[in-house]
Length: 245
Image (cartoon, rainbow, N blue to C red; front, side, top):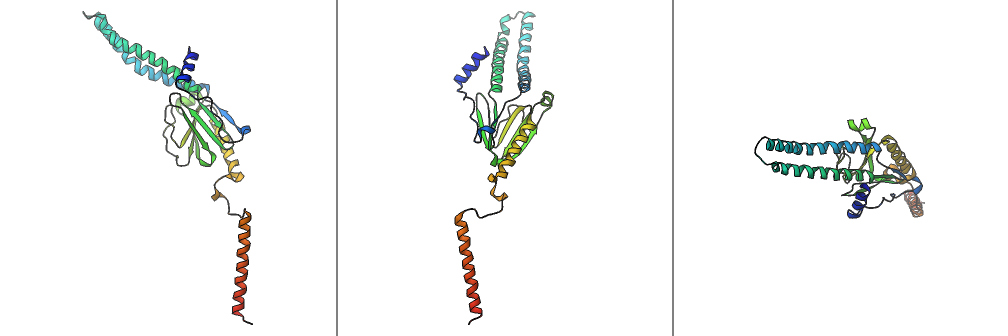
């Protein structure tokens, strides 16, 4: 049944196919997915939210049935809360299927030049970050995440440091923050990104301010030679004026 639901969602919601790797060497491409325990984490969040919404309606339905049994009220009196109870259960089951699909459609891709993150089902979010824009990489864990051995890796880009709040499920991905949610190897992914960022900068592809100015173009060398000739001519002229023959 879930396979049919997934196929229908992919068709109706027009969920894109698997993402293409971001710019970079194809041989360097690393693909990461959310850990199995992340799905368990999502199940716990789903169970808590479903329980919080269904329990009040369930109590109201039982109370209406008890009131109808203790008086001359018709049992039909409990139909209204019972209808909402059934509706909430159906919505909760659909939500569970979407949670599963959301987990499956989560991608994290890293190359030697950039990274790409895709998440979401109803609203698909895809973000590509080049190493030139990365400002900070951090890891966060809640108590339940620590228990399950998973963490969220946050990548701040230029202009985005401190822009987002917590990393819990459902937090919006801003235009300047990319999340690797629910990974069980966050330190290794962070080290990979940091090492490739260092390689990228060491290769001379980083900020120009990090390097001392050098003459690199033939035109620059010719201009420098011409300026030296002008300086030599000016020095000779000054000497001639100061010590006339």
